[in-house]
Length: 418
Image 1 (cartoon, rainbow, N blue to C red):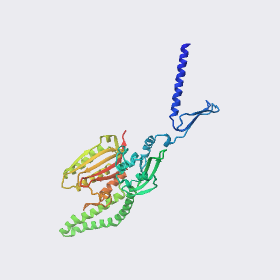
Image 2: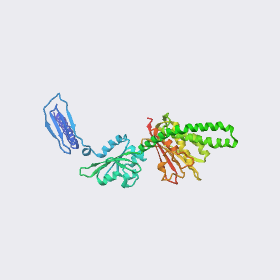
Image 3: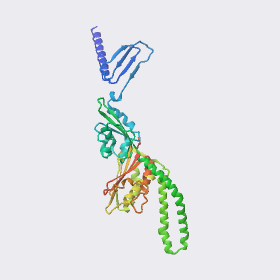
């Protein structure tokens, strides 16, 4: 009898402890909710931030289902840092730049598009001031302007080096202080490039029709007449006139490729393997011919990733960059390094040289069609190279400190092979 009493008391103590656990758990639930159990005939109500709950009686109904209703306010009931962690992978799917900063201008969220376009490591930029992300004066940073004025911006056009439309919104704490400033930036640079290419396409079509046919006619007659002309005139035709006509025709062909490139024959390739075999095979002989030191630095992590690209077109891009470095060579020995990295969700290919570099006054024009600093250059090589990369859903940019070489960066979407 005594043993049964002890077991019953122990069971009662366990139930009381379990009931205390439930009550304490409910006390820590900040958001309001209502739970109705029709089989027990009871309803529990909890108000926001209340330490206790109320239990009321309702009519029993064994056929009715229990119901639970809650009203969660993400700003009041949930730590905002966890909200940001939840939103981050969603914002990574957005093609615009999205950045959150706190009241001090410190970055708490930065989506992949912003990190990739600006060229930073997203994980490393979190926790730093927004000026370290944008690298422009504070007075040009619209997010900081919103912090200072406490006024959101609606479709504000900005004319800094990113050139675009910015929107900002403010989240407040309960005491009225600023919790976050949310900024979304829509770059207009791609639209400008698209307009340039549309104009280039229209010009190219006119050039192809109005000039190519006469060039072919002139070339044909020169070849026909050379048999009837003196030797010195034949030499002039073979060494100057026909080569210049062919050069003009090549310029038209390159320009047409920028406006309407050839269809890509994409395949899955591992970038490191591609560089070690296809690229090195072609560049090694040119490097030896021009006395150029060629080296590689390949990220081993990329062996688990692949890119979907036309190998021949990517090879053409890398050859263009290598030849540009050779043509810019000065008297000192030239060193070209090709490096690969896995960055965020991208494969990056760096082509660096220790040449003279690019003056800051022209670096923003190097990808413009017909822009060239070489007397014999057409100014189409880099335009065509970037267009090829963009057709493979990638991007291409340049960094240079004048007098200390140049670095072209190709970024392509990385896909895990797992």
